[in-house]
Image 1 (cartoon, rainbow, N blue to C red):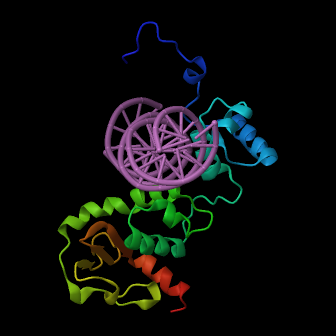
Image 2 (image 1 turned 180 degrees about the vertical axis):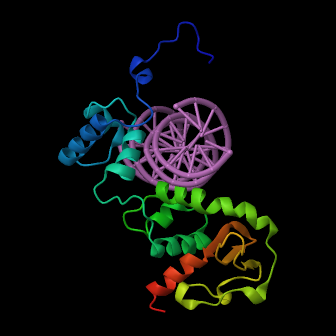
Image 3 (image 1 turned 120 degrees about the vertical axis):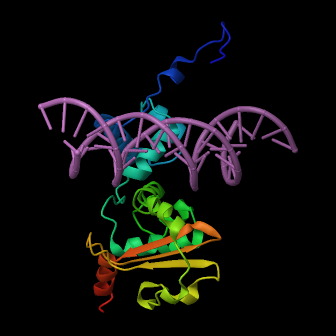
Length: 195
DNA sequence: AAACGCAACAACCGCATATTT
DNA sequence: GAAATATGCGGTTGTTGCGTT
């Protein structure tokens, strides 16, 4: 770092904590917000006596500590919604999150990256088989929903791995628009819709 | 039991935009 | 109106835990 020799160092700035939050920090933040409310994060951090940036406090509160935050166990309905909205809006995580009560942009983003995006790599080999496009309105999927640049692939169940059949749909205008629905998921959706 | 690889997730960073001074 | 500060977003990284070798 190109710090000039006589440059003053702001000790408070250096001592700002990073990394995982401790239970004690969580309690301080929760207690402070329960009394004073949320927002004005930089001054909140100072007033609460937390050696954290305002951004860090905001993130911790909105993603984990806020009472109505739901974490884990993305339901099939939520999965479908995420797929639909991502197909429509791309990586607009906060916008997508607003449609899923209790879910945060960070969680949806992580979910997408860890569960879905890795499959994008496999999409390199996808071939256009329009006749295979599923037409299943109960799942919000129908060929007519897609532009002519929509590609789809349908794979039969793998006899060696017993993996179910798989439908993959993505839009070449935006490779981020990508759907994969495996057989188990499909059957769970059918039961949800009373089929 | 140890080492390794990988998936999942929490949290940080940089940037753009909004708000305040 | 300009500068400073705060907020929000999306990309990325570091850590952890679990399964496999």
